Structures are given as C-alpha cells and as structure tokens.
Image 1 (tube, rainbow, N blue to C red):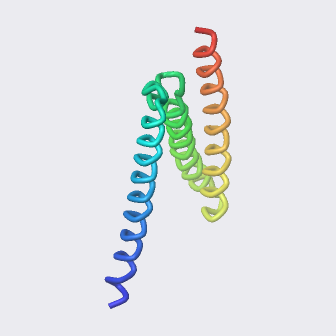
Image 2: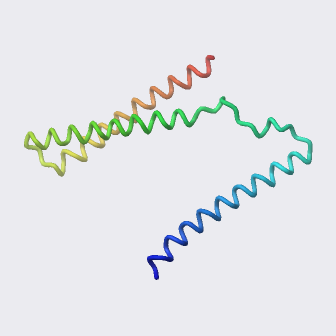
Image 3: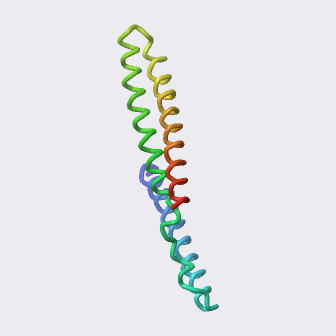
Length: 115
C-alpha cells in the first residue's frame, strides 16, 4: 500500500502547489486590471534571457561530465584505482565546464545589454 501512497502524495502535492500558484497569479492579475493597470505589465519580453543562460550552463556541465568520464576511464586503464579516477575526473571536468559556461553566459548577457 505504501508503494502506491507515496507517489500519489508526491504528485498530489505538486499538483496542489501548481494549482495554488496559477489561481493566485490569476487573481492578482484580475485585481490589477480592475484597478486600471496596463496589460503590458504582464508581458515579459525578450529582456530576460535566463533560459538561454541555463541551457548554456547545463550544456557545458554535461560536456564536462562526459569528458570527465572519458578521462577517468583513461586513468583507470593506465593503472589508477577506478574509485579515485572516476569521481575526481567527473568533479574536476564538471567544475571546469561550469566555470567555462559562466564566462560564456556572462559574455552573452553583456552582449545583450549593449544591443
């Protein structure tokens, strides 16, 4: 019985949170419209480009993890213990990937600001 209840509780909670968020947002918007607020207030234009930054960072992280697994297997083939080689290379290359993703996304945001 617990195998059924736990997923139901998790998905029920997620649905309830989403429902409360959407209904609250709708009520806020209706209240602002009743007070005469401009409808442009609700539109978020292309000024916010966080989705592109997130995709770039996740892509660099995935590339770094892949390179880390590859380097870990190369170190293991050269005689290093696999319990040390794989986690070390994954964390090192993943960190380098996140760092490079940060610099690329910062350059992207700076270019958007100057345009």
